Image: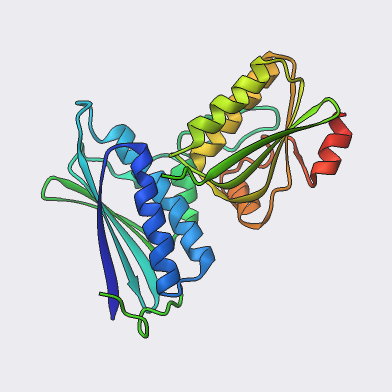
Length: 147
Length: 115
């Protein structure tokens, strides 16, 4: 059994807050461990901010769909956008930082996503990017189903 | 919409203490960057950023802190972080950024080193 919520946001960084807050709410309603919610919120921010910065070059307004699905054994975030094809998993690992040297933070975010979630998947379907982040954890989705 | 991040500011002797609480992410990292830059350009020479009440931070926050670190260096100011708790310390480690900043375990220690 699962509970799923769809949230459509525009390609503006401030709108990531809508999904972040929805994760808080769903997490508390469905008894998702707080640590899993934090890890998903960080991973969400990394992926969606990348989409906003790089998916569209026309400067126009576009929609991003984020689907939050809470299952008994974990939480999945599906992120859809119709921008340029881009597999975030292809971003190279940042170089190890040497003492006294500042790394360019590019790549740091995606590197963190790899560590924060249990599964990090990407597909290009019907001219849309579809990234899925899955975190395994016991939740209360079975007993506390919401519609 | 609340920004989810609160930025407080106080002084302990000549040390400027910036207390952050909440979440630092793409929605508010620029606010943090401009606040820190403003302090440095206003002539603060010793700045401690206390992360003790931060729930989490993302790479956007690291970028803001890196920019502030560079700006401080250009202005001959000391810029350090303190009180990295559970999730926050883990995220610094994941980002490989723990060694990049000067980090003190507590605010008292940071102030003592800078004061």
